[in-house]
Length: 161
Image (cartoon, rainbow, N blue to C red; front, side, top):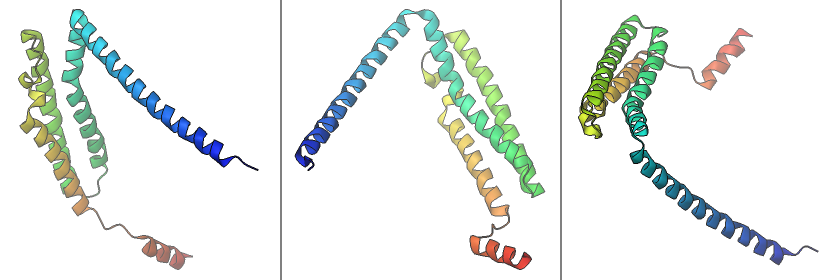
């Protein structure tokens, strides 16, 4: 005969110690990050690496998104929407190139540590980038031909057989 009470007690202790272990791991992680960022202020080279990473992250993310969507737009069947999409994405990539050069110049000239002094963190610029992605997505979705649902696909394959 099984000892259900023992299993429940064992399960309760497992859950309790898992919860305690999670809390301890979280506290150790936060203390480690505090120590890491304390060391970051003491070593000047790491400050430059950290700031360059902060400057490059939005550019890297959005340029990658634009390149992926640009590759998809090249194969889009409607020529007008395809060319509008390619023009918008090319303009966005050019803008990111200019902003990245300006931000790197600002960083090396002024050694600024606040993100407010960089153009790539400008709310209007970031909003325009997201709006461009959204606008092109809506244009392509509205101009694409209607996709057949599973019933229509099944009927088409039955008629062909």
